[in-house]
Length: 246
Image 1: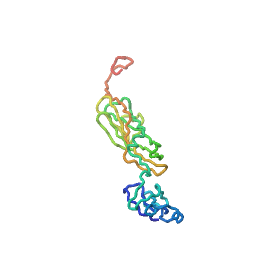
Image 2: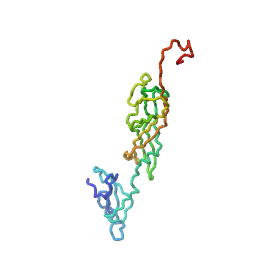
Image 3: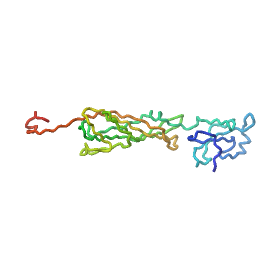
Image 4: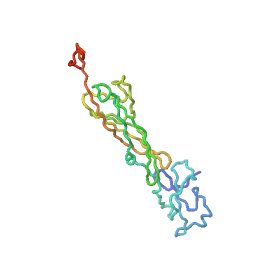
């Protein structure tokens, strides 16, 4: 079933609008009973009703809804009731929701050895929020998408999609997809930023993507990098408690 001629709107508008006289339905068919009782404008013309439907070619006009009340206006001078548009969750709204940051884990920790690979991994979860915008109930979903590491020695990595996973202690020091090795001893503050993708649903409607990503920083974690030395000794620590390495 073809849609009536649309009122020009932005190309990426979520909705498509058209206007018809007050006593017609979404298909443009007139209701004779309504015509007999409807009031007219000062110039004797019928009042106009604005209709709205999702801006998709497969939509049936019978799914359209009325927007606002009938009014007197020329067809070539539409007044679209933008206040009746569904709210849109912006990136600014998204970042204000209080998204919980990722948990930072390092193996081994709190101490490691110079030039040994340290396994870094992030633990993050999809989070859901219920908010109200312009009087409508909106559900928001935040999903972790990528991660940027700052190892504290001037080196950064990311954004990368790998969150990393824990490894058994028998594999500590081995290279992993998310590992990093320090070339100097010292104490380093490791920082992580997680980028969350956002989606929102207005009053049970379809999920829509939020433009942009929320950047959520985790609490820094300190890692101490040590140097190891080995020597040959002739006595055990039990025999000589003051010996080297005891």
